[in-house]
Amino acid sequence: MKTIKVLRLVCSIITLVILSTSHVIAQPNNHEFVVVLDAGHGGHDPGNLGNGYKEKDIALKIVLQVGKELEKNPDIKVVYTRKKDVFVDLFVRGKIANKANADLFVSVHCNSHNSSAHGTETFVLGTHRNKTNFEVAKKENSVIFLEDDYEKNYAGFDPNSPESVMSILLSQEEYLDQSIQLASLIEKNFSGKLKRNSRGGKQAGFIVLHQTVMPSVLVETGFLTYKKEGNYLNSKKGQGEMSQAIVSAVLEYKKSIDTNVDYYVDNDTASEITEEISSDIVFKVQIAASSNAIDTKPYNFKGLDNISMLKEGSLYKYFYGQTSNYEATKALIEEARRKGYGSSFVVPFKSGKKITLAEALKTTAN
Image 1 (tube, rainbow, N blue to C red):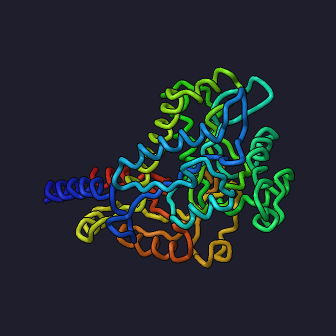
Image 2: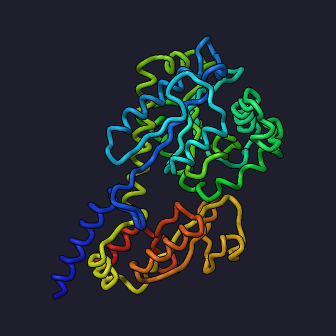
Image 3: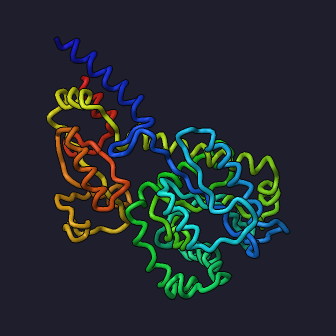
């Protein structure tokens, strides 16, 4: 009997792996993973012109190659903020992503500096760790001055004011954890596969990221002002390699979401898992991550109670509910999503420590 139960559990795990690549809780079977690709600048805004190159052209060529590769995946839908040399307001770029109900927003740029600075860096929305990060954000945010009615569209936002930039940060706190994850994967590919000089993942107040309501990153692919790097980014080889590195990171991110987050499980499989689950394993639903500690009161979490917090590194992660019954997590996720936490997902804990779902099932099998 014990052998039969183990065999049933192994079959359940295999079923989970197969189903998780295309199904998520509370979503239809034909759900597409939507990626919005944003080529920085465009039209009458050339971006930086280091060594005579045009940022707007290089960014567009990289974005189009990224999109072409991603579109080869039938379960991925690609949306572009621009596919040709036109100017698009920053707030419109965000609207495009939000209207598409995107799962990811990736904005591509090229950097510049009046020194020999070189290397890649990928930003998420957050506080400026140093003056350099603020200067990068200020340079990209200044594009709003080229827009009509920018005072109206950005409600008095001033790219030159650190205080003004700080005021836009809270809207992305819910997606910070996932944004950092994608930024890390992109930079890992740049430094590992391409042997590029990576300046790392960073946080800064980019207004184009502030406009979106999904995990979002801004990729600075290198410095056009550094001649060797400018030559590379302006070449077909460089653009091809950089685009492939971004594609691989997006696919790896998607795979991590598919295999570890929001599993869809049919009723029979869920029942088997619930029967076999160890008594010291519980499931919670992660709804948010923040760089600041927030009181776990319902009024801070759109009325949700039973909120717990866990600090990991510099991030505070917030979880809704707790249950030892895996099937019961569906109701928790649905409730969290009704409250506006669309990116919520299941996280198992064993003896109070966070583990992956695969580890939870492995522990059960043992």
